[in-house]
Length: 315
Image 1 (cartoon, one colour):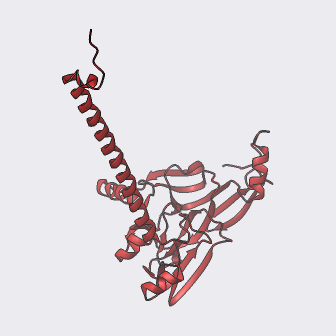
Image 2 (cartoon, rainbow, N blue to C red):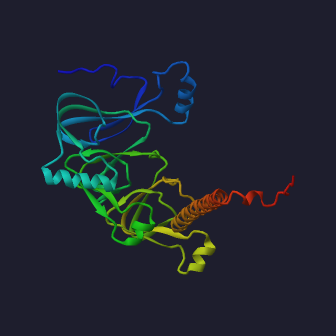
Image 3 (cartoon, rainbow, N blue to C red):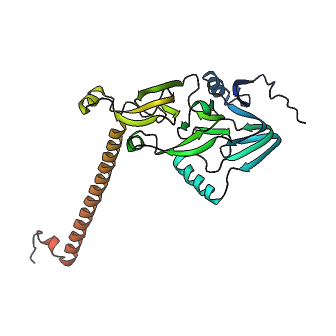
């Protein structure tokens, strides 16, 4: 039997959200600071920059978490690598490269408590069954019930992969259970949009999660190139169909007010200009070097050439 003191009854810790045996703990103040960092800790707390932890209560079920996310466990909790063989290992290793998630995610099962490492990011608890396949932006996954199927989904069209600035592959969660996500934006600021045979146009990569059933494409903001240029919007991300979108109020990749294609063209042009300047510098340096070498050789082979203009003296 295990008893806990100063865990559930800690006055400095508040349970800000809970769902399905998962609790999100938030520390009101950072009490473990010295005099030098007290001012920064105070204003950080006032601006909602606080430490948060995820406490998972296991009751015979299992949770899969990101590698290195576990802080401590209590009770009859066992850990196992969520790998079914060599082929599964290589498949997950390849998937981790394209989704930027950890290759091997440990699985914890049994009866007891599982506490995850503290983070300053905001924690989202989502019921995967409500999304009809939850597609995540890179780096959002923290944990989920092990019965949830994790797989990598590719873009259905080339435009969304090359121009949407969302990458070619994303992690998709399917099934029934709770998913724990790390978000740079709090849940109170996220906008949840539900679509039913309709479409949403977003100027930039503001969507952090969306339903797999939605068709994601990148299109011109207007039917004509002139209209797109005049509107100043350029290309927009278009989501069509039936499903949901979780949208942040600010761009996660700090790409504001610019077309992604134009940014890439400018990048390539700048790279070309830099390379051209370097080549011009090298060419000029080589030209000067060879010119000095020719002058040196000429002087060495014609020692009287430098004195040809000096007046001759007679004795």
